[in-house]
Length: 571
Image (cartoon, rainbow, N blue to C red):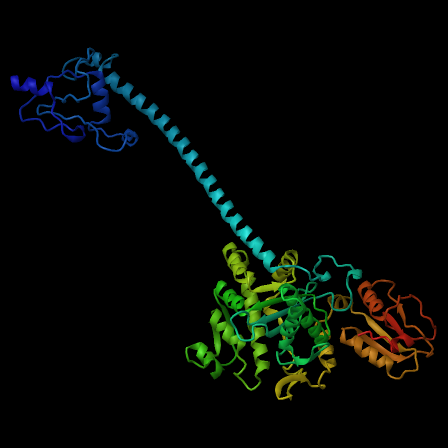
């Protein structure tokens, strides 16, 4: 009995508040209080409730029952509690349901528990909402910071690449006739140059020369390539291959001012633009220059470029760049990385046509690369755009402005790149160039004769027809009002090369016209044609024929050539 009482006065515990198991036969006589019942029976007893989820993690004191069924007193219960209520074997059912009774207390505990659960749920909901808002705010901040970084990086890189300076009225959404200088201005013609760049032999030789011509009205595009060995004459520079004129003009400018590198590069580009415009007979509105490093990085950034190789490309001279393998590309569909792509577009030893086939491969690859860059997976991906800007920043220059580039991008999304026309000046059926040897050099010259690019100009002008001439489709009657034989035929051929439809070539009733006359029989319904003709011939149009005997049935415009046409170069 003594041992029993001593044990109850000092309940034994182990770590975490758990009681040691009671000795067999021991019985507790400690009184049970309301507090002890409320805590032990309904929180830590055999009946588990959802309230367990609200308790702190870890172990907690629990109620133990001694042999005999009497609950042991928890260590935190007050031994001095004065108020008690009878257990199930100590009072009647009535006493148990009255205030202070066991059943009443049990019901009260359930009510308080439910209220606590509701309060807890509300608190948890508020906490969840608070953390959701915090998380969303943090995500927005991260996006703003990330997006701001990409925008800032892209902005500086864009300004580094897109310097501006070129102009093309055709980029405007609504082009007025008076904004166009002449036939061809209805298109956007971009000269694309590729050079080796630092670390390569002949870093400033432009071995890739193409013109990308875009028709914003009809949403079409065309690539024209000029062989790098094309023999040209440059005023003040003499004759040379076209791939060297950029370097020659640049170095000559540097000799005058070695510190003005940007000015020297611009002088080189301007010289190339003038020569290319003379060869093709169309205006050049913008240029872009890319070196080998930018080309290779761009291909890698977009994840490679897939093209259908028409035949095996074998080049023993480049095998050392291809792990000793002279087969640079196998026939069939292939995906090229940057290194493979560069070899593919640079090789010119893979066929008997040499540089002609090389320019064809360049056009093929540029078309595929352009399609990949403009694909949704690239230009809508900020990371890809940032990587492209990083690749281009130090290795690309252009006189497109950022707004020009954005407008071109808008037009580019509407252009069917799969239908992009590709033109080689030595490709059948228009074999307009041939190989030759000048001063021991293998060169490319016009079929019509060295320096005679008239056939090339006529073909290109008609192929790259001004969209406004194509849209208005004017018919012209050209009459010779002078005594110079063949004048009307010559002028008619020139106008045809620009895409005009000449329906009549004849001699005027009199040959005494001092000045050329343009008669507009459409009453101003074809304003672009009217503007182009006035600009080309240098006179203002009239709406009345100067001679009633002139027969011009079906013509929209009548042109009577005067003596001024024999002395003025209208080309």
